[in-house]
Length: 198
Image 1 (tube, rainbow, N blue to C red):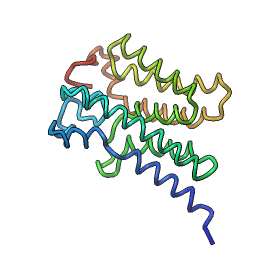
Image 2 (image 1 turned 60 degrees about the horizontal axis):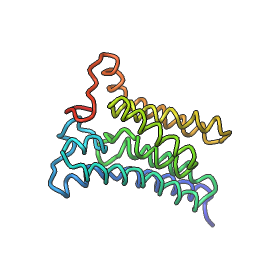
Image 3 (image 1 turned 135 degrees about the vertical axis):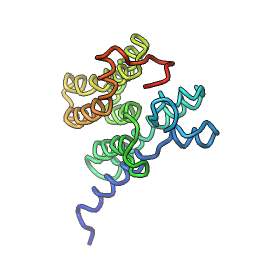
């Protein structure tokens, strides 16, 4: 007899495990770029990887962080009805709060983009467009990420999707992860792309 809660629990755990893979940290260590947590802002995301001077590594980190969110959604959806949002949300949480790094993970922008795109590709396209527009328009990585995250639940609401609650929850977590950036933006001290601190 299979316990009815076992498969949903597996989907949640799998999503978390996928999301918690710190690709930025792994790639920089494998290529001899150093411990990412001791570089720039100490964040494990693609923006901080860029500060190592390795643009290729930063692009690879961005892609892999995005893919782990998307893959979690696709696997979750294949295993159980409603498993896509469950696994995707847990992948995002795993990226932001990985147990192996004492819950000090990334800020979740790329992983959220992967989750949103896999769940609802039109909203994912809007997410990417807003991210790129705000990023290149302001030169602030944090503004690009936050604007993109906020755009997701708004876009889904206009499209009549039932994914608004889960994406809104992810957006709130992402904004919380950016609280130091928000404080610096308000103080006028937030560095732009290419500076030494995120």
